[in-house]
Image (cartoon, rainbow, N blue to C red; front, side, top):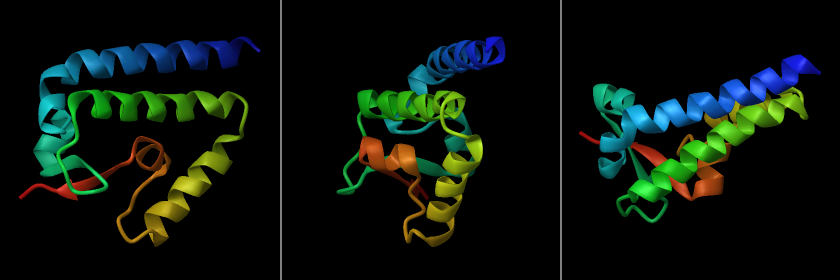
Length: 106
């Protein structure tokens, strides 16, 4: 039981650190890693994602990671794996929840 609580705490700390490190990058719909590989987060209608939308997307991602305490990780990873393989825009669960998608910027 203690291991599950540790996973939740680590996930929350990871989310806060991720947001702090990438705060200035969120305005452009990109994290630091996305800038390096040339991708960007946009809304599903093609408009630029707001900073708040990108933060909410990250929070949903962290929530899905925390859900592995309740739902077996294989289930969540399996759904994301299937979406990555078969969805035409490669949108994952947190993209569907936040109404976003990742596109090539260049």
